[in-house]
Length: 307
Ligand code: MG
Image (cartoon, rainbow, N blue to C red; front, side):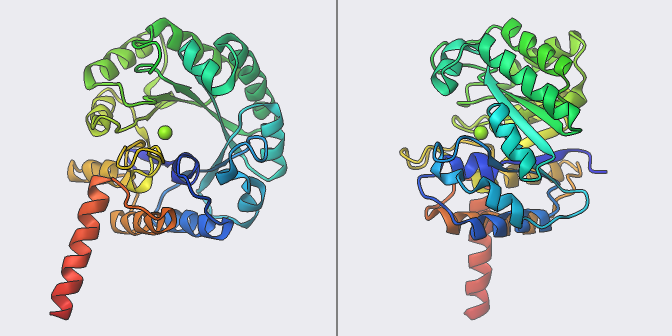
């Protein structure tokens, strides 16, 4: 088994934050390339109300055409009970739910208080668990909220404890707008683990908005976290702010872990090729550092061959 696992979010979190709409066939090709690179956990789509997120309105059709591969888990994001039902009907066996640690962000994102969201999510988790479906709970704004600033740790802990008690297998701590720093990551994890949460119940969903994603991932790894969310090429920046980077780039994570001798189970070249394919789908350059390096090295070697 790989020492760390990459949870790939590009088909959902990446494409959701891109301006254009990608065809179902192209999404399936991207997912097949990720599987071919050895990625075993892929968040493929979101089962929100059809039409709410046009980029992901083909959730049911997409899941239907995905290749079934042993050991590969396709995850669907579900905002509520209706979304869970659609996901289950579509054949999804791994679901992710979400809410924010801060009131203002949660209110703006889903128009509910944290308390209301938590109650809804506990029901979703309970039903999923009864169906034998595994659940990951995303908590946004753990390391800072764009509206409220620092988020008290107690708010995160309360949500983590309730999601785990309800039956979630993994809690993904989200640095939603890249406000975290390595010291804060260590502090949050130290306090979570002191409260009885196990490192293998935690994933880190980091954003590179301010260039801290890799440093934060390393801090998490040193604390014992072994699952990291990434998006090939760093896809998923804000579509209206060119160059603004969002999700941690998968290639950057995998390259860094490999350089440290930490196995990820992923073929970095094939992952980078998937990143280039993803770039061709969104129609603009993706910001991932290893992605840009790999593309440059490939074009230099191609021109050396033709010279
Ligand atoms: Mg994200």
